Each structure stands twice: as structure tokens, then as C-alpha cells.
Image 1: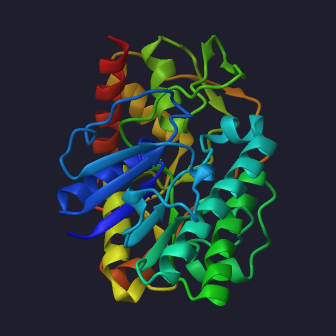
Image 2: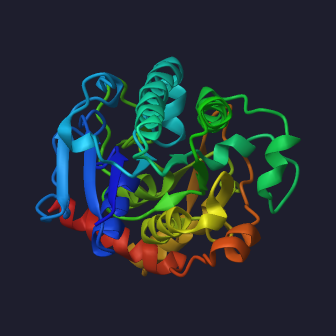
Image 3: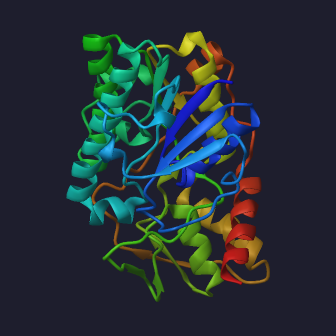
Amino acid sequence: MKKVLITGSQGFIGSYLCAEFLEKGYHVVGVDNFSKYGPITRPHDNHPNFHLIEMDVIDFDVDNLLPELQDVEYIISGAAMIGGITYFHKYAYDLLATNERIMASTFDLAIKLHQQGVLKRIIALSSSMVFENTKVYPTPENDIKTCAPPMSTYGFQKLAVEYFCKGAHEQYGVPYTIIRPFNCVGVGEEDAIGEHEVKSGNIKLMMSHVLPDIINKIIKGQDPLHILGTGEQVRCYTNGRDIARGIRMCLESENAVNEDFNISTPVSTSVIELAKLVWDIINPDKDFSTVSDKAYEYDVQKRVPDVSKAKELIGFEAEIGLEESVNEVIEYMRGQSE
């Protein structure tokens, strides 16, 4: 049975990854310190092939490895301070500093296991935010070589993740795959713990991504609906199950070794279109109206990937449509509020 370590296993994307790899017969070791949501249960917790280590990834001791980590064949580096645009503006320094420490510790482990002949590859989760300053749409992977670097600390740190891959490979020969997920949507994203409280109109933001924040405001009766900026910002909302499947396909493909991939749906949707879709599902008999909240400095206006490389090299295509994803999240959040 292949053994994979997933850092950030109890987080949003991490929980999708655990479900995907367990379903496909892997032994999964998860590492999480519950720093974002607090203590939380996930559907994979009691799976016989899942083992959770509750600790901070920063505290890995490569000279005294825990027994559960000594025979890990693959690492998926999902642990990070991460959230929606409100989150990474409010925690600009903490996010940068903490995530750099997490990456250094994760790659120290990868290097150690590779030197021992155990590790086959590290899968590093970057972000579409590395293309913060691109002028090319849809954006191909190789645009990373020519577009200006990100201005936000979050985007810059995610670019640094990619350089950790390249540095570990160049000096130590560690095989890698870089994954750039585009706007993951799905169930399991909770209200983030933190010292900051930010309101959008009369509703406290969840400090999460755009879809749960919109749903939360509409469920709580906000009318007119507050939208960040103009609402014309364009994203490609990709279901977490599709992203997890794409990551697994990368891990299982030799074509993905030392490569980078945009893992996303190619279908683009504006924030205002997303809000209207949610509104019509929850409030089918009410007119849709919005007001604009002040936009954040690094609210990128357009993020649309070229996904042809993933299709050609590993056979990946996103399958789950936005309406299906939105209905899943609405049902989940209604259940959480009951």
C-alpha cells in the first residue's frame, strides 16, 4: 500500500485530498495543528488507513523522525495559513512568515526522506495568485517565467513555494510537482479563528473564500447583498473533488515529474454572476440587488487558467459544474447553522 503524507489534512483542500487518496487505496498520514478552524472532525478521521498526527509542521524533527513518517513515499504540502482575500490582507506578515517556516520544515523532511531512498516525490500546492500580474488569458503555466511577480505577500509566498521545489531539486535531486489550484469551492470551509473581525454590511465575514461568505450573508437575510468591489472580478471556481482528483493524477503520472500544472475548470464566472446564482437558489422569489464594499488592494480582477497542459500530460479535466458545487455548499452551510 502506497503511503502519502498530507500536511494540512484537516483543512479545506486537505480534507478533499484525504478522501480522494483513501478511496484509491492509499495509506494516508495527516498532519494538522487545527490552527485555522480549531478542533474539527472530518469524514476521513475514522478510516482504517488514516492516521492523524496533531502537531505543527514547523516542529518536524528530521533527526528524530516519528515512526509514522519514516516510510512516507509521497508528501503533499498542503499546510499553510490561507483564506480568502480578507484573510490575507489582515494577516499579511503572519501569513508570509509562518508559511515560509512551514515550507522550510516540509522540504527539510522531503530532502531527508529522499536521501534515505524512501521519498519518490513532493507535491507542492502553490496558487493561482502567482499569476497576480499576468496579462495573458487564459494563462498558461509557462507565463510564470515572464509575468511580473505578485505584489501581495500571499502571492509572493506561493511563488516562493515553487522556488522551494526548484531549490530542493537542484541541490538534492528531490523530484517535485507544482500544483496551482484555481479557486477551490466545496464543503468543509469553516469560520476562521483570528483576532480580526471584519464586517460586510451588517454581517461578520467568515474570513474564508468568496462563496461561503456570499452564502452566509444571503442565508442571514442581507438585502441588498454586499459585494466586494464591482463584482466584475472573474474567477474559475473548481470543485474540491476535482482538484483532489487532479492532484492524485499528477502524483500517479510520470509525466508530472518536475512539472507544474494549473488544476482548474476552464469555465470563468464573475463574482456578481456567482452571487446571482446563489441568490436565486436561496431567494427565488426575491429581486436581486447589491451594493459595493470597498475593494482590497490586491483583489485581482481576472484569474483564468489555460488547462490544456493538464489534459495533454495527465488526462485531467474538471467535471463538476458550478451550480452543483454551489448547491452542495448551500446545503452544507444550512446544516451547520441549524
